[in-house]
Image (cartoon, rainbow, N blue to C red; front, side, top):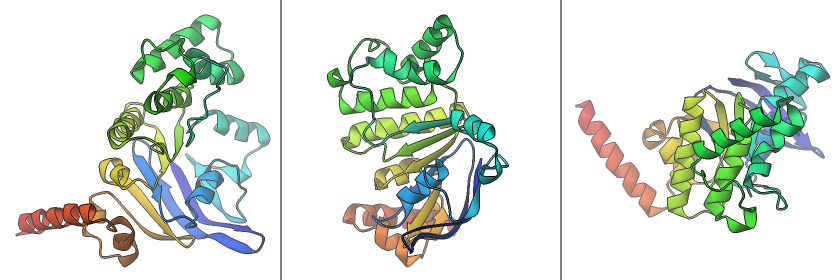
Length: 259
């Protein structure tokens, strides 16, 4: 669980995050959405410790990050897995080497233990025979699965994903969404996803935080988003005719069942 209380962050006198409070629960896919400039990237980087908040608090299962010693902060960082927007694989390493990198860097596991763990997570993301392939030999979807395998190889408590579907076709995006959600539930991870993909919002948005101009304008689930009357949310989510039709169908069924 990650708790955010009154988070404020400014750059050169411009306040980007304006007192945001929310709770990201373990075992759920938590999405941060909003237009460009809404503050979602700054929020994600603040959660990761890349940006130091001006005020407010971020706590990881009750541990307030700003109050931790350097050793305690290092421990929290070892509990974090990260899936980068462009996958960020090492071009000179094959799949097995990319996935094993965090274990070699941050653990004292033996080569045998590393091999067993790497084999397990590579198979878990359905890349069983890709151990010795180079990133250049993989499709965008396969690269993303390698990135997910690398992010979970060290059994993280917290998983952060920055636009995990960026550059992927709709079918592959659904595969990646489902994989992230399955892993989140299997290992009871607190997963936070920074996304602009409305398909992801509708498919796996168990908790959605909508930012607008640095404020938390709305939060709820992908079911709540269909029935909200929050104008900022509806203008953002239902900008396309397709989602307007989906919402209309959902509302008709919802109110029918209320009778």
